[in-house]
Length: 306
Image (tube, rainbow, N blue to C red; front, side):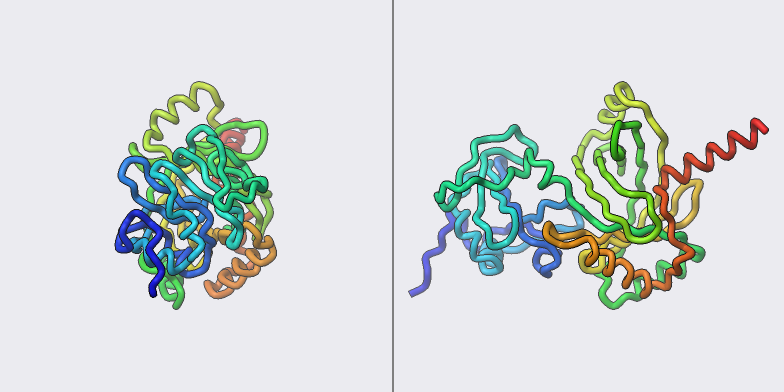
């Protein structure tokens, strides 16, 4: 006798998840049941581009991770999360970003819950390993990237303007894609050549120009970086081929780390990919784009004064 389907929604209900979850490159840590349309989303807690999403049925997700049966009664307008695969699911009312709500244990065990992703810096502060290098031949590098046997699909082409603000610690930038899409990003990263760890928090916004107006009134603008970015994916790595206004062409790798993954493992992934792309140590860059731009401007000002 077959087991009864536990969800109120039919087995063929369309849901959204991420390719990197289905491929095992990222863990399933976050489930949302939308308040407005009842849609289900199965996520990893990382930042998501529209191109990352893939449609599946609810039954396919339950087959992929049977622990989701414990969330069959998750009401619309609620979310559930866990610290890592195999741990119990925890739940709270409200969409991500809402005020914290009382937390209920799914299994009723009464143990202390994992931090809510809506208000926990530990959950929101994702980690990756980054490495940046200069590119002498832009077209040759694009061909090399697209020739990788494990590159996932075509590039996503993004026009980005990053506005940096003076803050007491770390870095803060507003990234504007267009007038209806942007991100506020806070991150910490050492300026060293070669692979370096970065922890970051991202808050998407549908009103970046309004956010810029507000930030400009309360913070000092440090500078801006404008670039065209070709975004590729190879497993857990985001490959950025950047043409930066006023600086030139660069390759940037971001290896997205799992919560329990050591930095060294990410660094080895980045270095192996650099070798495959023919990047030499002499091409590595330690500074951020904004620092390179500010240094160039300072040099130009000094030359003018001299």
